[in-house]
Every structure is written in C-alpha cells, then in structure tokens.
Length: 245
Length: 318
Ligand SMILES: Cc1cc2nc3c(=O)[nH]c(=O)nc-3n(C[C@H](O)[C@H](O)[C@H](O)COP(=O)(O)OP(=O)(O)OC[C@H]3O[C@@H](n4cnc5c(N)ncnc54)[C@H](O)[C@@H]3O)c2cc1C
Image 1 (tube, rainbow over the protein chains, first blue to last red):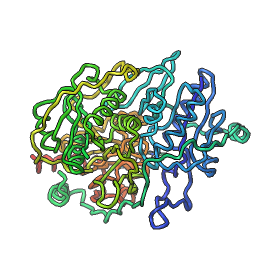
Image 2 (tube, each protein chain N blue to C red):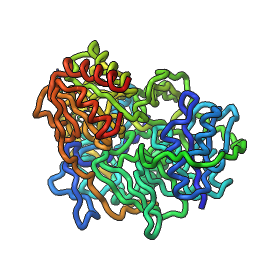
Image 3 (tube, protein in one colour):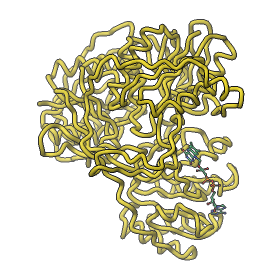
Image 4 (cartoon, chains in turn green, brown):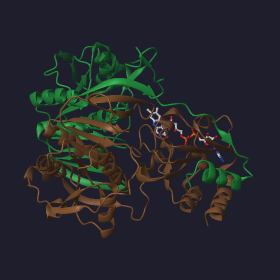
C-alpha cells in the first residue's frame, strides 16, 4: 500500500503570535516550528498501517527550505521518503493544487493529512485535493481501518459520530484518537538523514486569495474577581453587566 | 451580484449558524437564495424569510436526504450556475468545510474560511478571517470573480425583518460518484445542545477530579441552558466524550459566555475559547493562568462554588 502523508510546518502551539513589516508578515523571530499536531496524528496512523500491511509512506510538504528539519522529523518518525514542493504555501488552493499533482503522479492508495493546519485553521485542503483528484475525502476522521480495498472510518459529527466506508483511493483529514503521536527514536533520527528528500518545483502559481494585512486579537481588560460566597452577585453581573444570561 | 446560502439541518431544524449565514449573505446582496436539503418546518420556513432570504431552492429528492458533502457540493455548484450568484456562504462546520472546499474547486472560486466580518467598502472583495486559532485575524482578499465563504459563529446578527421567502423545488443532477462514501451507521445524542452552536458553554477540567463529579457541571449547564465542554486530558482519560474536547486540538468555540471550572488555562486550551465574548473562570489557584484571559473570576473550590452558583442562577432566572 502506498500512503502519502501531507504535513504542515507550523509555529509550536505555545509560540507568541506577532506580525512585522507594518502588520503584513508573520514575525518568525524566536518561533519554534513543528509538524502540525493533526498531521502528526495522520503520520502516526500511516506508520501503524505500514507496520500492519506493508507498503511505503511518502511525506509531502509545500514550503521553502526552512521546512526541511520538520520534514526530516517526519522521516525519523517513519516516512520512507519525502517530497518538498519548493514554494511559499500562500493559500489553500495553491497548496491543494500542488498536493493533487504529486498525488496524481505517485498513484497513492491513501492520502492522509490533519483535519486542519494550526496556523490558518482552514480545514479546506483535504476537500480540495479530493475534488481535484475526483476521489472521496472524509474529515474529521477518528479511526481508520483498511480491509482489502475498503477503508472503514469513524467521522466525528456534531453531537456524535458516523461510521463510514469507502474504496481506496481516498483522502482523510485526521484527528485524535486515530493514533498516538510518535516520538522519533535514535535509530529513526539517524536513518532520516539519508532517506531521500526530493525537492520539486511548483506546478502552477495560481492562488485565489491574497492577505493584505494582519491584526492581533485585542487583549482582555482584566479580570473582575467575585467573592466565592457571593454567587448572587456574580449572577447579577452576568445578567446585568455582561448581559449574557 | 446575487448570493447563495447553504442551510445545514440538524435533527429536523435549521441550525442557528445557518440563519446567521442568511443574514450575512443578505447584507452583501439583498438577492439571497437559500438552499435546503430535506424537510423543513413551517416555523423554519418563516425564519428563513425573516433572516433575509428572498428565495429558497428546496431539495426533497431521496438521494439527498442524508448529509453528503460530495452530493451537496455538486448540487450547490449547480445552484450557483442556475441563480447566477457569485458568492456562496456557509456556516463553518465539518460538513460546511467539506462542501465549501469541493464547491470552490468546481466553480474555480476562491475560498475564505473562518470569516468574521462583512466585506470592507474599499476596492475588491476583502473580509477579515480568524487565524492562529483565534489569536489573530487576516484581512483577506478574493482575487477571483466568484467566492465561497465559511463563517465563524457570530459573524452576523440574525435579522428578523425580512419578507416571506419564495419557495421553488430543485432537483439537482444525481452523480453516482458522489455516493461512494457509504454511511454504515450514526451515533448521535438527541436533544443535546450542540457545543459549536451554544451561546453558553460550561467546561470542566482535571480539577473536577473524576467523571462522577460531572453532575455539578451538568447541573449548572442545565440551569443556564448551556452546552458542556471539557479540557483535553478530561477527554483523553475518557471522563467525557471526545466531541466535548475544546482547544487547539479540539473544538474551537465562540459562545457569549464560556465558564471554565478546574481548568488551568494552558495556551492550547485558550486557543479554543479566546473568541468567546465573556469568560468566567472558577479555580482554586489564584495563580492559574486562565484568570489572565478571563473577564470574571472566582477563586475557590469548585465543589463548593458550583452548587452555590447553580442555586443562584436558578433563584435569579427562575
Ligand atoms: C500539541 C498540544 C495540543 C494540546 N491541545 C489541547 C487542547 O486542544 N485542549 C486542551 O484543553 N488542552 C490541550 N493540550 C494540553 C494542555 O497543554 C494542558 O495540559 C491541558 O489543557 C490541561 O488541562 P486542565 O486544565 O484540565 O488540567 P490541569 O492543567 O491539571 O489543571 C487543573 C486545574 O484545576 C484546578 N483545580 C484543582 N482542583 C480544583 C478544585 N477543587 N476547584 C477548583 N479548581 C481546581 C487547578 O488549580 C488547575 O488549575 C495540548 C497540549 C499540546 C502539547
């Protein structure tokens, strides 16, 4: 089985978010980058599927050369090889288009990725890739089992879950508890250095959105503390000051 | 040009976020067509008009009865052509996301997600969208002639001054390839207030000590008509179902009031709640980081504070 795992290279969940150049660019100063946490779940499940069924895992990232340490980490966790499409991931359609092109060439059975990236939180790329390839896309996926050509999945829906089945090839947007995050071991880290990482040029430069400027969420004014013995006072504030109950 | 809105139906009723989508779309252009799949109550039909839709394309054909992102995307693309609309508006949800992504590709349209504002007045079509899990916004321009927008909760106020909506039957083309994902079964809590839609959320963390104490969280939620949520360790330990997990790797919520009980306020938890209008924190540790992100706070033991607060709510709200 051939699995393609698409990974994002995103600021660590504790990173300070700030902008520079007159609020037109993300400020990378001092920011640690990680594999997107949802993509990390997708990768972990791919490694389990390979252990169980054999095959190969290709990690794919659309990004500049600065993302290579993140890609090497995916190789250390268990991908066999990697592709980096050498371009700034400027909008979700641009990225989906690159992924679809790599996927079409590689004839993958499964295309796994996170349900959303944690920088833009779009949750759009898996659906776009599915549509571009003319195959199903399912998200957010909480369990994924392969039986022959069929894939059985649990999808989270509002207020519950849905059990679905589809034939490969397909795209899945993953989330917990599909697998436990895997921490690379020493052998993985050593072998990652020599695993192939192919750098390819983007196939198209079409993008459909453009960000003009960024803004930060305004900070909170400060907390108003209420005496734990005065819950009537608290209810009064919620009702008459905040007007939310 | 005209706008089109996808209506999401849950347990037979149009979701509140879909009414927000109608009012948002009607503020862009008064010629707003809503598309609904499945039966609608008379009450919802009236509300669709009041919220600002002038026309409703109603799909009642059997193949479209179950939510299916691929089939709905094909139908919406067809409806866009049919109405000549240039903007498709959906409320953000896992169904809405999948439909939006697929429809945008079919239409060669731009897709902007997590939209929080109406388009600005100046040149081009530009809206504000929430990024970095609620920590920032990006003013994003669409560079194509058609666009698809998914709205974050509270992006628009629901209007109530609209007219009666004109209903038209709509039979979209059925494409076999859109039915390749088979739904085997569905497990769904009924009568539960949906967490992403809720105006008030009461959330519990590890400070609640164990699942047996959740009656305190549920009691307060019930008194307030609120949904219940939890922190990641709570769902990891199976004290609560995963769908209640709020935060960076869980659900992002934007209620009017978020009440956090026994949650420390780790940055990954805050990422899921920082779009709430007001935050109330109940924690016995005055140094808990959550207090820095809160509007109201009670420093105290949840096991004493919660029963008192629930009583006070009942006393004042009747
Ligand atoms: C990549 C990544 C992603 C993550 N994603 C998420 C996420 O999506 N959502 C999330 O929630 N977490 C997430 N986390 C975990 C996060 O870092 C915290 O560990 C978690 O939020 C802590 O949960 P908690 O506040 O319930 O527990 P704790 O941090 O243990 O806090 C318990 C709190 O309860 C208080 N308390 C104890 N007893 C009482 C009492 N009797 N009365 C009142 N208060 C009491 C304590 O003072 C303490 O503040 C993520 C972590 C990582 C690394």
